[in-house]
Amino acid sequence: MILTRTTSLDSKEKQVVFELWNREYPKSLNYNKMKEFDDYLAGLEDQNHVLVKDDQNKILGWYITFKRENEVWFAMILDTSIHGKGIGTSLIKKAKKRNKTLNAWVIDRAKYVKNDDTIYKSPLEFYLKNDFKLLKESRLELPKISAVKISWMAD
Image (cartoon, rainbow, N blue to C red):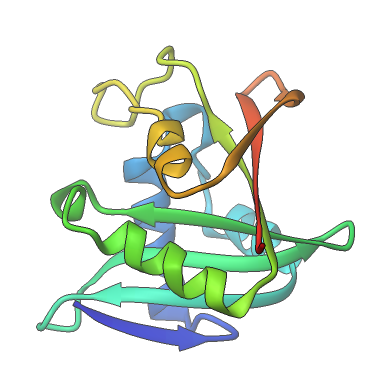
């Protein structure tokens, strides 16, 4: 796998990430139009993207850090075909070297389905194995999604 860092996505990369988002995240979080995804990205401050590409240059994953309310936040999406191969752990380790803290919202309930009608598997266990702390008192409860905040802080 090839990891490519950038501060912005070109239109082709954005299209692939948009499709990856809609394929791998719960259906309730899907964007119907590219403009909606553009608006999401436009609202993120200090973006740093990492694209995960195979040897044919096909994008199979996306990782982003950004600032929100003076904290560093991140999102990560990996194509199902590369789950369990250590790529997510590698991305997290690299992010930890570049940041003193990392925060994210993580779906922690198995009640969501993806576009292909398979169950969305919560990545919470993965993040806990990678030294993130669960902040149970900090929840995101929206009509589209229920999630809990996770956080990592350097020693």
